[in-house]
Image 1 (cartoon, rainbow, N blue to C red):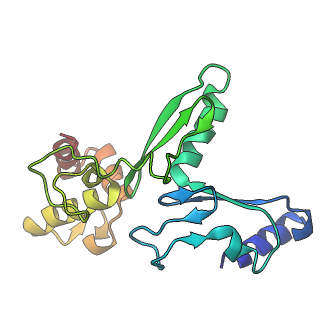
Image 2 (cartoon, helix red, strand yellow):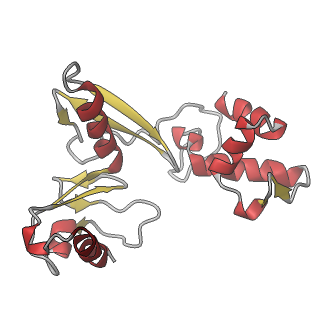
Length: 195
């Protein structure tokens, strides 16, 4: 699918694949030496994958990979801080939580690519048990755990439809849209969850 997407983008932009100088990936989880992707929950493979080696089976081109939040952080650095800042930390809250670290104008990934993997920092030692086996990890503040917890709350009070959606179809965006509109359950739950 990745190769097909690259070919489609080249056709759409009228650029020959031969004119490409390289391919860059911002990808979930740790990345080692800008090439090797370490599998995390949600990936469909179990071993470390050399992304360049896999892509080069189809296209002979340099391939670079970096953790997606590191890419976001570097983008923020380029757009907002390049002239003033040499060191920044970007926290990304999406389906999970991660951090991108820029030190002396360069992405800092750490020795094994996990420098910004802050999701399993313990913030509540009495909290729920995380998939990593510890209690109260920061990962519970991400979008997916938030949605799961919110849906459990709705089920407990007997609500099957919420804000124009079946609860099975509800997204995190729908919940925050409801809160922006002043919907009381969403506002209350976001405030409780934030604490």
